[in-house]
Length: 231
Image (cartoon, rainbow, N blue to C red):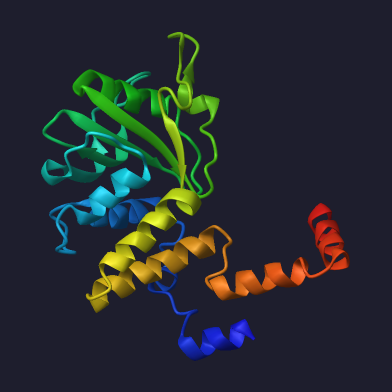
């Protein structure tokens, strides 16, 4: 039934999947950076960035003066410095947000160590986020260097964020803000649907509710569902 509804509404049509950027982290970073950029082509100033810093619990960040860069080069790679930051945001108050964006790619050696070092050396306050589809942790390959006696600690030196629990709610807020701008609104809608596809979520909230209602209708249904999960 919901497959039929999707055909009628065109819900399955997604520009991002058609042009095959679903697994391309560089393209994801470029799209997110454009929305976050106060000078972006969306024409909404710092509105989307303000929603973003609220979603990620970033405090005292001056969104109006922020500069957003995708694929920011920070120097030649050494054990503890250099590399290319996926999304970098800084303001005139010497605060910075560093986002390492992971869709399916593996960590590089000392990657978060190098980015943390850059933020610490050049800014008064930094927020280092490790962004994955569902909030996976960074590998020791990225956060630990035994020779230099360095090991970053999660929730102290960096934070885990996810497309499922952080980016998706933020995008939905952006979409609501863009309700009167059809092209922008629908562009965000296509990306929202892509994120739901990548994180194995149904596009239809009505279908999710109906499935939950069906499973919890009686103990037999719930027990059968539990057996399916186990297997």
